[in-house]
Image 1 (cartoon, helix red, strand yellow):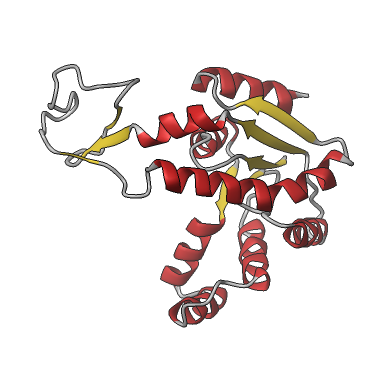
Image 2 (cartoon, one colour):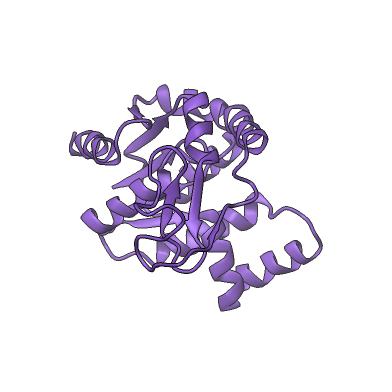
Length: 215
């Protein structure tokens, strides 16, 4: 089974992809992770990508397509793939079709995690983590049991990601809508798009996704 997970940053794609990996033995193909791994491993595509990034340029669709091809070729027979963060444009969607069909694969589902923008801003901007062990907290939804002390390791130092602020989150949301909205009609025409309430509890989102892929 091959699926695309769509949703703006903070919608919970990473968590749900990980659960699919654990439950079904699928492989999560995140373009950012793949690029870093290929560069580190020094593969031909990785070396090409490294040269482009060192020049301060964006990695081309052709390089990303080659990376995805490499990853698909490394899958076990019958192992499914989850595309996270790709495709982002109509051209990439077309390219993915070609990559899959040349390997006897096709897309089964495109699942979009729908979110409420204002609620997502609150969810993201309130996040902070223990600087020592990385346990996550939230200003509104999950404070440490003892104020200022990590529940897990007892550290008193916490940190926030600098891009977890309202302006950045809204910019990323607008970017997601502008770039991803054009690819949805392509898949809607094939009848493979399903939408899930990304603001629901994580387990409820997982159950909804499981229902979709169970058909």
